[in-house]
Length: 367
Ligand SMILES: NC(=O)c1ccc[n+]([C@@H]2O[C@H](COP(=O)([O-])OP(=O)(O)OC[C@H]3O[C@@H](n4cnc5c(N)ncnc54)[C@H](OP(=O)(O)O)[C@@H]3O)[C@@H](O)[C@H]2O)c1
Image 1: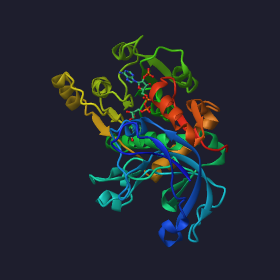
Image 2 (image 1 turned 30 degrees about the vertical axis):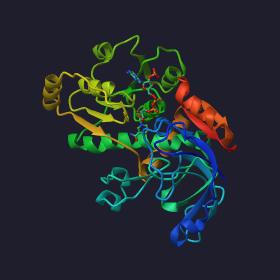
Image 3 (image 1 turned 90 degrees about the vertical axis):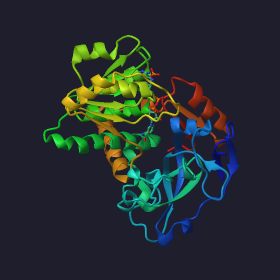
Image 4 (image 1 turned 135 degrees about the vertical axis):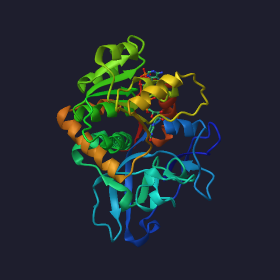
């Protein structure tokens, strides 16, 4: 079967190759689920893998099949699988357990192992292929009513984990109920975070560079949030108008914005960083002022990566609620389909060059 792969560490090595179709026997104890891929998204991590900053091939192979944002349909299940049947729409989590205590208790998204296992990223092949087999415990059902949002399940799991982390940490306050939230970045993560926080009842300001109106500002406003372009309004001016936020979810890919966020959040507030940054940027920051304000204001900073099964399930619930509250809006994030495995060059071009592309994905088959 066809698969899109790279030779990790080698630039411009992305290629189409033939690999063996997997079988249920690869998963022990009759717990396998065979999934036919319908849509597979690509994101900034795939871009970094393609550009050879990131990515590790599975042991014994010199190539890595990329793609970690999958959506497909169940074709076959092992004899002990009771949760899924042929025809179900599903997605799959990305990380698989390692050896740390966190992996052992089922929270492999919190692994403390240095070597970790992520499908399509590190040490395991990904989903940009025709079929995959997975243990049922890592497969997550997608309701038919939101099948049209297909490859957004994984990005939404990242958002769900980040906001769940916020809630976990802020339980320390006994009466945590965030009113004003800033979302830094209006890419796929920023827009899905905007949706999630609007559904939580927050007044949301989503901050990016490009002046509106554009597709990002339109989606934000359709969700009832306020889009702010830093080319038109500085964050300082925004704060002078609306006050300091209780919560900031940072998703710009810019470490400067991540550190700036520390100066913006209000007392008892929480900042969650999700951006992955690959360059060694040096910054000058007002360290004394931040230190003083953070101590006197009891503020919290959390880093958040990946998501486990519970975060996928939570994200799917919020995408479903999003469809009933703001019908037809979230699918606007799915801007850039590419048909045909042989068109992987176009997939890369859109991912790297098209600044208006919110979600680039391989459109393998109709729903
Ligand atoms: N933690 C995790 O598990 C996880 C998972 C997935 C992704 N990520 C990371 O999350 C980040 C966001 O991902 P994404 O796919 O949403 O990225 P994206 O599509 O590149 O979107 C980035 C957004 O940030 C805005 N931005 C960038 N620099 C800015 C600046 N200096 N000032 C104001 N706005 C700025 C951009 O503004 P314009 O729209 O105006 O260009 C854009 O709206 C990336 O770093 C990605 O690697 C992390």
